[in-house]
Length: 115
Image (cartoon, rainbow, N blue to C red; front, side, top):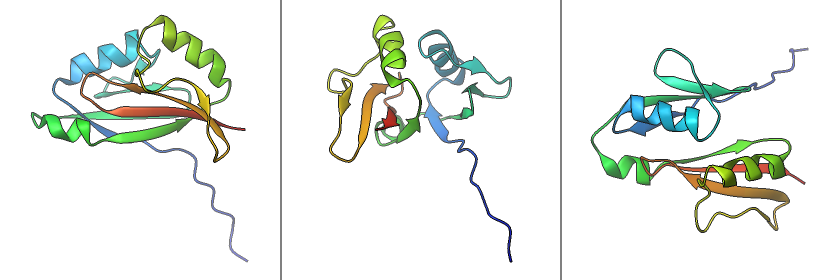
């Protein structure tokens, strides 16, 4: 019998025009901590950045982060004024509550909690 495989986390590579600017945004606005090697982390989530001058890459990049206590996170990000105008917290028909932000490079991040 083989042992059970458990996926633990995902570390996306996210495009950034300027890595230091991206790190500062995630640290100051989203509450992440710099990891010391071109990325940030918060809890079990780590995001690494790669430098690119192609602005379309950010606009075509998105990822989802599952969280607990989504209402608290939403209030935290509301205070930082980073909620996307079309990304307010709402219950979705597929059984999640979610909201979205757009980072300075155009990357869409959806935070969600399963109902």
